[in-house]
Length: 485
Image 1 (cartoon, helix red, strand yellow):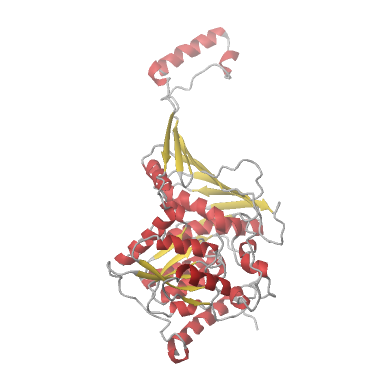
Image 2 (tube, rainbow, N blue to C red; image 1 turned 135 degrees about the vertical axis):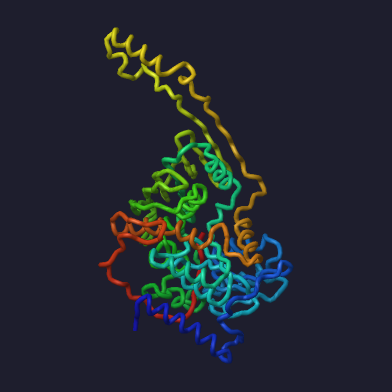
């Protein structure tokens, strides 16, 4: 019998409770709920586990391990081949615990933190369960799959007292920090427009990831992968290329818009837009996917104490056979900043006070006496020193060659774990305020409507009320299939 999402979540929580109270039945013999673990000693290693050993799961694990005094002690994934690979890659000098069931990870008392690197439709479930189990959490972007899931994660985080970081690591890069410094210093004046794009034109970039020849229901757990998504027969493409399907992922918005918007929010100190509208289509990668490969979105940001009102336009094109230049441009009334993860160019251009006359102007259409009177009045209002603008200036910034944004993002997470602090650079409130607009992009696209959002209360003003609730399979177990970059 199938049930809705609420019933599913209750069944998952109930299953966790069973594990916690029936320790005798568990082969690993530890309670699943470990509230309020003691603060990590500065002299101790932080022991972490990665849930989801796909592409991004491996990259995250490697970046985490580039920090001192941390240790990988366990991994979880639903495909046996990835568990075997993890044991070889990360357990050469030790026995690495590996499991298909993420609840076994959460039940271990020797694990301080978990990396949640699963398909998007499991981010909220595993994150909440991990926080309740007393674990610190690093959750990949986007923090949740749907707009109505964010507050539950935030509530769980606040109640837990644990450290949580959302994984959009570019904001820890040197160039993003420099962009933030320049904006805060008022170097480009008042922001009025921002545009950011991330284009691709290759099969792997369009999520046509390699599928192992041994993929089957014997080597992976299909039912656990589905979780609360609609039940359907085994499909290896959906498992290994889950980003292509809205049942499990969040499309180009959740994979790429989220990086762009996270960077903008970090640099400008904004809380988010109030109006979101997106458009797009499936132009090239017609491989069975049900999400667009081209999407553009317009967002309206209101005036706040931090900035003037501005408009932002985001774009992703997976069929861009032209020159690709993925940058973010923040435009103000005194200049612009164009930056990527590795470099930055600021161009300062300030208008003179005097507007000028002549050229493509109505001045030449006046009679000569009127022109003379116009010049007389103009000279009286605008003395010579108001007629010249400062020369255009261009300032370039190159990130240090050893700048490792990914490792630094984890460094911020681990530092706050050691301090017992919840104050990470990308905590769940920041993470949801960045995720919500991109999730609204999907809602706007699929429902062909403008989405109105309150960035302060993090509440949708026009939620869909007439859409039927999809029925989803009840299954009281985790799944940790390949996380795609």
